[in-house]
Image (tube, rainbow, N blue to C red; front, side, top):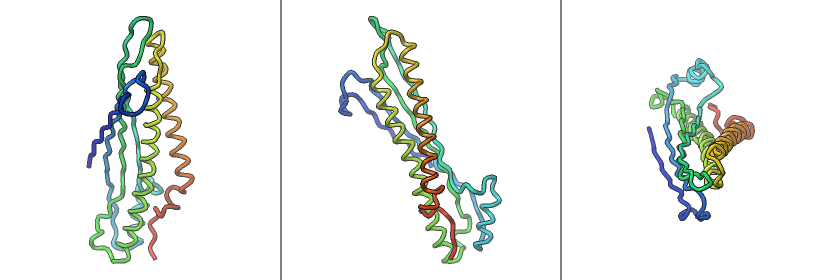
Length: 189
């Protein structure tokens, strides 16, 4: 499933000073699945354990691309437009025999799946929040005597985005014990 979302934040529509650079942000969200199998709790759990990284039940990855235009006029270079695209990929497990599992197994699976979705959405929100902060920072880059200086400022803010996202995602994993505190563990009664 691919969902495209686009938002345009122009100086006059976001409540920011008119001198700021217009920044548009777009997002794509791709959801993928990998199959797990089993008609007993033991077989289903074994299916997870046979994966390359059995400790990881789901993943959320984010990528960001920046496209910008600047112009030199008079004695200064200024950003004219910035386009950010946040690409998010989420991979979830898909229980192939869910419709054939026992009522207790299906109930446990639904609890697990719901908690896993909540956990992965937390990762998505951290990517979105960081992209929003980056958008604000890029919009506020002032004109400079050279376009090299403007480009360096964009690069610094991008690097800051990367560091922040990495730290925030790691903190989220620690705080939630990789989703365990949110119920993202497959447990059968």
